[in-house]
Figure 1 (cartoon, rainbow, N blue to C red):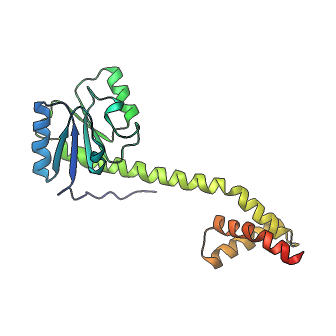
Figure 2: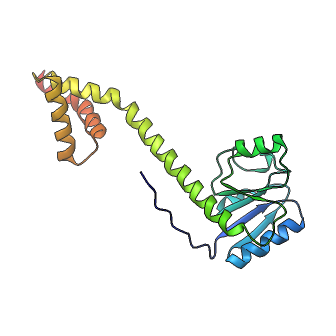
Figure 3: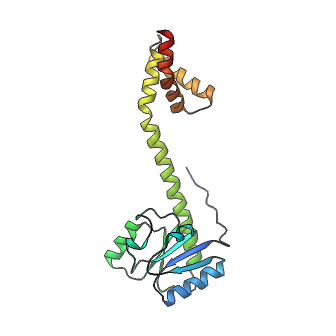
Amino acid sequence: MTRRLQIPDLGGARAAILHRPHPTVAALTRQLEAIGLRVEAHWPELPASARGADYLFLDVDTAHEDQFPWTPGQSPMPTIALVGSEAPGRIEWLMNFGADAQILKPVGTSGVYSALLIARATFDARAEMADRIDSLRRRLGQRQTVVRAVALLAARGRSEDAAYDQLRAMAMAWRISFEDAAERIVADAPTREADHG
């Protein structure tokens, strides 16, 4: 499945920068403001209010987990790493943190716009993939319910294939998912058994 990417309108977006006071912050702020973003710089910790930002820039050279009001890999917004040191420990920390894009320091007069776009696309793709995985896990968890529903329908003198086809037809008639139809059949089973008892 191919996703069609669109360039987001960045005007009015909010960017949080977690970086010690430094000329890098001034250069980054100039570029972000020129693009149309509102900028907030923070140090040494990111306040909980920063969760409302649209983008986060962080200094990988000095960052650590305690600076963020969320667990590593769970950033609620696209994250752009500012990388100055390529020390293996810092790169490993960055990979575990889960940044969506990076800019090499020192920050110059270019690279910020493309980093914003790449970070947004990566963040959105990761969120979409997580949603799809959750959906598949839920459906997999409902497999036992489908088996029970088919067994209940087959207990009325049908073959398993005929019961499966009946369940599919019921889901289509009710305009719900196959798994939801199975849940409905299983939930109604005690009522039907009482009626027939």
